[in-house]
Image (cartoon, rainbow, N blue to C red):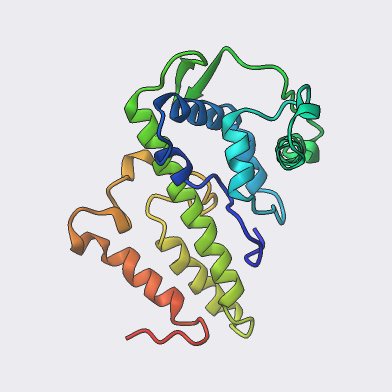
Length: 217
C-alpha cells in the first residue's frame, strides 16, 4: 500500500478484541473469514489502498446492504457504499464479480468448516487476531521501508536489504509475505526465550540502518 495513506491494509485486531459483546466478536470473526481470501488477494495487486477503521468495522459487522440505506444517515450510507465498492472491486482485475447478497451457510478456517450461525472456538478467534496482527505488521513495515530506503542503493545493496527485511518476518514465505505459518507462532519477535529473537531483532536493526535520520547503536 501507499505508505502516505491513512488506514490499515487489514482490519485492526483491536476492532475484534475490544468489543464488549461476545456475539459481536463472533460476527466480526465470521465476516472476516467470509471475505478473508479476497481481501488477502486484494493486497497482492498493484497499489492497493489503505482502509479506514470505520470502513473495516462496517465490513466486519456485515451491515453493508443497500436495501435500507435510504433510512440511514448519510455518513452510514457512505460507509456502506465504501464497503461494497471495496469488496466488489477486489476481483474485478480477473473478471470475477463478487456476490455480496448471498450469505454462505458456513465459513472456513485452516481446513475446518464452521456454520455461519454457530460460535467459533476460542482458539480460532485467537488465531484470527494473531494473523491480522502479523499481516498488518508486515504490510506497515514494508511500506515504511519503501518510503525510507534511499534510492541511491546499488542493485546488490538493495538485494541484501530486501533479504534483511524478509528476515524480520519469521515463518514468512519469501515469495509471499501475505502467508503466515501457524506452526511458527513462537518464533522471531514472539519467541519466548529472548535470545531466540536476535535474528529478527538484528535484521530489523540492519533494515533501519539505511533509513535517513536513524541512528542505531
